[in-house]
Length: 203
Image (cartoon, rainbow, N blue to C red):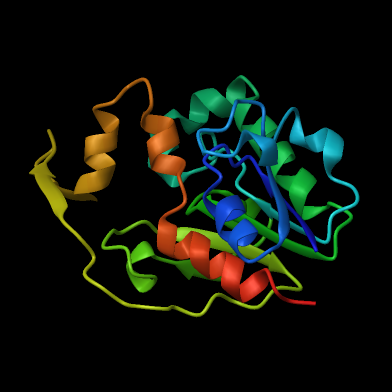
Protein backbone atom coordinates (compact mmCIF):
# COMPACT_ATOMS: atom_id res chain seq x y z
CA UNK A 1 0.00 0.00 0.00
CA UNK A 2 1.22 3.49 -0.91
CA UNK A 3 0.03 6.26 1.38
CA UNK A 4 0.42 10.01 0.96
CA UNK A 5 0.48 12.17 4.10
CA UNK A 6 -0.31 15.54 2.58
CA UNK A 7 0.83 18.75 4.30
CA UNK A 8 2.61 16.73 6.99
CA UNK A 9 6.03 18.24 7.64
CA UNK A 10 6.13 16.64 11.11
CA UNK A 11 6.03 13.07 9.68
CA UNK A 12 4.05 11.94 12.75
CA UNK A 13 1.74 9.57 10.84
CA UNK A 14 4.32 8.75 8.17
CA UNK A 15 6.72 7.33 10.75
CA UNK A 16 4.00 5.29 12.48
CA UNK A 17 2.99 3.78 9.13
CA UNK A 18 6.58 3.02 8.22
CA UNK A 19 6.89 1.07 11.49
CA UNK A 20 4.20 -1.24 10.08
CA UNK A 21 6.01 -1.71 6.79
CA UNK A 22 3.69 0.59 4.85
CA UNK A 23 5.13 2.65 1.99
CA UNK A 24 4.14 6.06 3.34
CA UNK A 25 5.46 9.46 2.30
CA UNK A 26 4.96 12.88 3.84
CA UNK A 27 4.67 15.86 1.53
CA UNK A 28 4.90 19.58 2.22
CA UNK A 29 6.36 22.67 0.59
CA UNK A 30 8.60 22.95 3.66
CA UNK A 31 11.39 20.55 4.71
CA UNK A 32 10.27 17.88 7.14
CA UNK A 33 10.97 18.29 10.84
CA UNK A 34 10.88 14.52 11.27
CA UNK A 35 13.99 12.33 11.24
CA UNK A 36 13.46 10.76 7.83
CA UNK A 37 13.90 13.19 4.90
CA UNK A 38 14.15 10.13 2.63
CA UNK A 39 10.41 9.63 3.23
CA UNK A 40 9.57 13.28 2.55
CA UNK A 41 8.53 14.87 -0.75
CA UNK A 42 9.18 18.60 -0.65
CA UNK A 43 6.95 20.12 -3.30
CA UNK A 44 3.42 21.31 -4.02
CA UNK A 45 1.30 18.33 -2.96
CA UNK A 46 -1.39 19.15 -5.53
CA UNK A 47 1.02 18.06 -8.27
CA UNK A 48 1.27 14.48 -6.94
CA UNK A 49 -2.28 13.53 -5.88
CA UNK A 50 -2.63 10.68 -8.39
CA UNK A 51 -1.51 7.09 -7.90
CA UNK A 52 -1.98 6.58 -4.15
CA UNK A 53 -3.97 3.89 -2.32
CA UNK A 54 -4.74 6.29 0.52
CA UNK A 55 -4.41 10.02 1.14
CA UNK A 56 -4.45 11.49 4.64
CA UNK A 57 -4.42 15.27 4.32
CA UNK A 58 -3.76 17.98 6.88
CA UNK A 59 -4.52 21.16 4.87
CA UNK A 60 -3.68 24.48 6.55
CA UNK A 61 -6.50 25.71 8.76
CA UNK A 62 -5.34 29.33 9.14
CA UNK A 63 -8.19 30.76 7.07
CA UNK A 64 -10.78 28.09 7.94
CA UNK A 65 -10.77 27.43 11.70
CA UNK A 66 -13.32 29.14 13.94
CA UNK A 67 -10.48 30.13 16.27
CA UNK A 68 -9.66 32.81 13.69
CA UNK A 69 -13.23 34.00 13.16
CA UNK A 70 -12.33 37.56 14.18
CA UNK A 71 -10.37 37.88 10.92
CA UNK A 72 -12.89 36.15 8.63
CA UNK A 73 -14.31 39.37 7.17
CA UNK A 74 -10.91 40.53 5.98
CA UNK A 75 -9.96 37.08 4.72
CA UNK A 76 -13.18 36.80 2.74
CA UNK A 77 -12.63 40.19 1.16
CA UNK A 78 -9.01 39.58 0.14
CA UNK A 79 -9.65 36.02 -1.09
CA UNK A 80 -7.54 34.14 1.45
CA UNK A 81 -10.48 32.20 2.84
CA UNK A 82 -11.59 31.07 -0.61
CA UNK A 83 -8.05 29.95 -1.34
CA UNK A 84 -8.16 27.83 1.82
CA UNK A 85 -11.51 26.33 0.83
CA UNK A 86 -10.31 25.55 -2.70
CA UNK A 87 -7.16 23.87 -1.37
CA UNK A 88 -9.17 21.74 1.07
CA UNK A 89 -11.54 20.67 -1.70
CA UNK A 90 -8.66 19.46 -3.89
CA UNK A 91 -8.26 16.61 -1.39
CA UNK A 92 -11.99 15.99 -1.06
CA UNK A 93 -12.21 15.58 -4.84
CA UNK A 94 -8.96 13.67 -5.32
CA UNK A 95 -9.03 10.49 -7.42
CA UNK A 96 -8.21 8.13 -4.57
CA UNK A 97 -10.20 5.25 -3.07
CA UNK A 98 -9.45 6.04 0.59
CA UNK A 99 -9.21 9.60 1.90
CA UNK A 100 -9.09 11.32 5.26
CA UNK A 101 -8.99 15.12 5.61
CA UNK A 102 -8.11 16.48 9.06
CA UNK A 103 -8.89 20.01 10.25
CA UNK A 104 -10.00 21.81 13.42
CA UNK A 105 -13.61 22.89 13.88
CA UNK A 106 -14.20 25.48 11.17
CA UNK A 107 -16.17 26.63 8.17
CA UNK A 108 -15.75 23.45 6.11
CA UNK A 109 -18.60 21.87 8.07
CA UNK A 110 -20.89 24.22 6.14
CA UNK A 111 -18.83 25.00 3.02
CA UNK A 112 -18.37 21.26 2.33
CA UNK A 113 -20.22 18.98 4.74
CA UNK A 114 -20.20 17.99 8.38
CA UNK A 115 -17.20 15.85 9.38
CA UNK A 116 -17.70 12.13 9.81
CA UNK A 117 -16.00 12.21 13.19
CA UNK A 118 -14.64 14.65 15.78
CA UNK A 119 -11.87 13.24 17.96
CA UNK A 120 -9.75 14.43 20.89
CA UNK A 121 -6.11 13.60 21.80
CA UNK A 122 -7.27 12.52 25.27
CA UNK A 123 -9.22 9.66 23.64
CA UNK A 124 -5.93 8.25 22.33
CA UNK A 125 -3.64 8.45 25.35
CA UNK A 126 -2.45 12.08 25.14
CA UNK A 127 -3.71 14.37 27.96
CA UNK A 128 -4.69 17.31 25.80
CA UNK A 129 -7.87 18.90 24.44
CA UNK A 130 -8.02 19.66 20.71
CA UNK A 131 -11.24 19.10 18.78
CA UNK A 132 -10.14 17.50 15.53
CA UNK A 133 -12.54 16.93 12.64
CA UNK A 134 -12.12 14.04 10.21
CA UNK A 135 -13.79 13.86 6.80
CA UNK A 136 -13.59 10.24 5.64
CA UNK A 137 -13.98 8.41 2.33
CA UNK A 138 -14.03 4.59 2.50
CA UNK A 139 -12.31 4.64 5.90
CA UNK A 140 -13.87 3.62 9.23
CA UNK A 141 -14.12 6.02 12.12
CA UNK A 142 -11.15 5.85 14.46
CA UNK A 143 -11.76 3.82 17.61
CA UNK A 144 -10.46 5.51 20.80
CA UNK A 145 -7.56 3.55 22.25
CA UNK A 146 -7.07 4.98 25.76
CA UNK A 147 -9.04 7.72 27.47
CA UNK A 148 -6.94 9.86 29.81
CA UNK A 149 -7.13 13.29 31.49
CA UNK A 150 -8.01 16.25 29.28
CA UNK A 151 -4.96 18.13 30.54
CA UNK A 152 -4.55 21.61 31.99
CA UNK A 153 -6.60 24.64 31.00
CA UNK A 154 -5.94 28.35 31.22
CA UNK A 155 -8.87 30.51 32.29
CA UNK A 156 -9.27 34.29 32.11
CA UNK A 157 -11.82 37.07 31.84
CA UNK A 158 -11.83 39.13 28.65
CA UNK A 159 -12.28 42.91 28.38
CA UNK A 160 -16.06 42.46 28.20
CA UNK A 161 -16.12 40.52 31.45
CA UNK A 162 -16.76 37.17 29.76
CA UNK A 163 -15.03 34.08 31.13
CA UNK A 164 -12.75 32.33 28.65
CA UNK A 165 -10.94 29.00 28.72
CA UNK A 166 -8.31 27.46 26.47
CA UNK A 167 -6.09 24.37 26.79
CA UNK A 168 -2.78 25.35 28.38
CA UNK A 169 -0.74 23.72 25.60
CA UNK A 170 -2.55 25.90 23.05
CA UNK A 171 -1.89 29.08 25.02
CA UNK A 172 1.76 28.14 25.47
CA UNK A 173 2.08 27.69 21.71
CA UNK A 174 0.85 31.24 21.15
CA UNK A 175 3.92 32.56 22.98
CA UNK A 176 6.18 31.14 20.27
CA UNK A 177 5.28 33.53 17.45
CA UNK A 178 7.73 31.98 15.00
CA UNK A 179 6.65 28.34 15.39
CA UNK A 180 3.18 28.52 16.90
CA UNK A 181 1.37 27.53 13.70
CA UNK A 182 3.47 24.37 13.41
CA UNK A 183 3.09 23.55 17.11
CA UNK A 184 -0.69 23.96 17.00
CA UNK A 185 -1.07 21.89 13.84
CA UNK A 186 1.07 18.88 14.76
CA UNK A 187 -0.67 15.53 15.08
CA UNK A 188 -0.57 14.11 18.61
CA UNK A 189 1.29 10.76 18.92
CA UNK A 190 -1.73 8.70 19.98
CA UNK A 191 -3.83 9.85 17.04
CA UNK A 192 -0.93 9.29 14.63
CA UNK A 193 -0.51 5.72 15.88
CA UNK A 194 -4.26 5.06 15.67
CA UNK A 195 -4.40 6.29 12.07
CA UNK A 196 -1.52 3.97 11.17
CA UNK A 197 -2.72 0.84 12.98
CA UNK A 198 -6.43 1.21 12.21
CA UNK A 199 -6.20 2.39 8.61
CA UNK A 200 -2.76 1.45 7.36
CA UNK A 201 -3.40 -2.27 7.11
CA UNK A 202 -6.80 -2.04 5.40
CA UNK A 203 -6.87 -3.80 2.06
